[in-house]
Length: 482
Image (cartoon, rainbow, N blue to C red; front, side, top):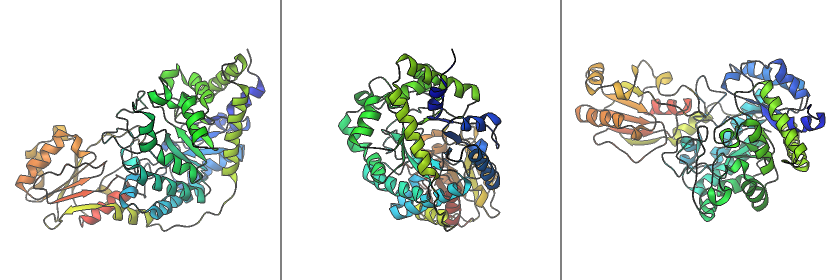
């Protein structure tokens, strides 16, 4: 049976699609003219500033008020800098400095970069309180582990982004910071009473709402005391009750990508996840990164069918489409793009750097960088000291297949600087560092979420609170290698 054209247009008005490559396919532009809310851009859509500006202009030619969204958090999650690393430190570094005005300025600079590129919705900032040190998906994306600290920096980030005319989207409601699993891969559970959630996880969202955030993103996490067996994205209690009711949020509720297993696998597919999210109170649905016209049409058709058969109220669909349209209208209002100091990110990274010990015995070292994995949110983004070294030899190694003897032979009589991310989590890396420190001068650069581990005998321990291009530069300078 054919989909009702009016329902199809309403359904399309709640969807953020995506496409692959540096130019928009015909279907991506056509759907915008037919009512699609907009598209989310990923690293595969970005090659250089000129190309990105042409791409967004092409999309906006199809629909002037199209929402063009991106995940540009700075730090370890960057789409603009996915080929080089971000020129800005991420949230963990900004939280370590704990200067909300600096956070506001950094996010204003990110907003300026996005506005110049033609992007009007940033799926940031991450306002999760990273209370689980082994969290595989948040980590350095968080401002810290203290709710008050995260709250004040969340408000500053929202303010900075939106001064540039780029809508901020605080994520991941009601808080992804206490999880030890990745919602891209499964449905994490945060099994705590609501009073713990209110004291630990929710203050940054309250601060973001008070700062005027235009959007809040729901998390595909299960909080039994609030959401029952379902993820927050499908929970009326979480979205319509807590966020809309108690926290009086009036902007657009945006879902995390529905293709993630924490959503699609629970609902029985992306189209079914879309209906469940709308019914719970979401307004703008991120389908995901792997999207084509057939998938968008399937999602729209399922939403229309659910409206027709009573699974989804027409008034709820109309309300969602209206909130998405209001977000687009706010984002389409022209604002002056102000210039910012090109050294701002590096200056912030320098302030964040924690230096313990002395560089005195580490002149002309061998730099050893341990291969580290990446989360799905981060993707493969270059990191480390390599781009900043002035003639210093750097070698990349896999810890599990590297021996003390091989590193010692490579270094000769030189000191060794070892660079990694989440070093404390690898017994192989810890063992190598501890043994090397007995034999020669050794320095360590930790570029992931920090820990209390400090190996005996190490001359210098640097903590960068992130692995962005700016963080790497600041560390290389501290070692006198840049």
